[in-house]
Length: 273
Image (cartoon, rainbow, N blue to C red; front, side):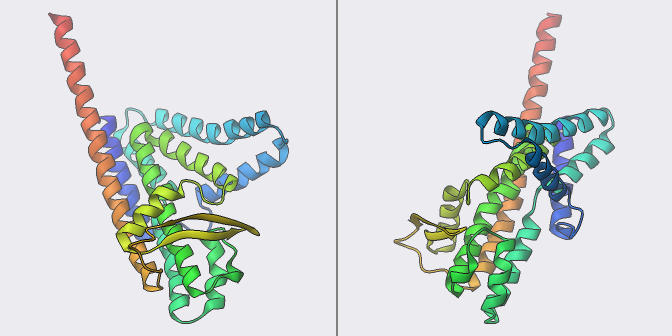
């Protein structure tokens, strides 16, 4: 079976698995990697760029290398290769758990339980929850759903289409490593897209870890303030984006595979001539 079809079948099965099952409460592979990376950092950390590069190479490079070895081990066994791709896809995408956390906070806000919403907000993002009122928490949830749709679903599928199982694992592990270096990496374009699609205003003044940031207001002229019901709308939009991303990545990978097959046949024909 060609590699493009292995990705198509495996990625589809993995995303369906995430939609149906979500992430396990305990023993998630990404959480295990996070603990291992923290242990490596404790041993290697120095206030020096070279040591930081070494830590990145050991953690993300080691995970991607292990995934490459696993992919090589199942080469020539289509069923095992599809299963490996499905397992990798399921382990790195996080759309269902993202929606679950967002809905839990949205439900607390709808019930008027602001304390419960503040308690759960750190499960989703790094904002300081205690100074936030209901609308500000709802805005934080919508922004986090937007950003994590890109990071936890779309980005993983794109890199899986490009690099197979090593691409899936390497992207997720690099993301996990770098996410702690900035409170909200890659947020602007995807938050702006969600703001436009939902007709709301996002961005503005935020607080992370006692540090206040002033960011541009997104969709400020046409959008309205975020309301509690927009949390559910954002979750539904996130799921549609994930399914669409899978379709685009699978179609692109299949098209690339067919183009490669035609190029190979053309070269073979020229060689015989």
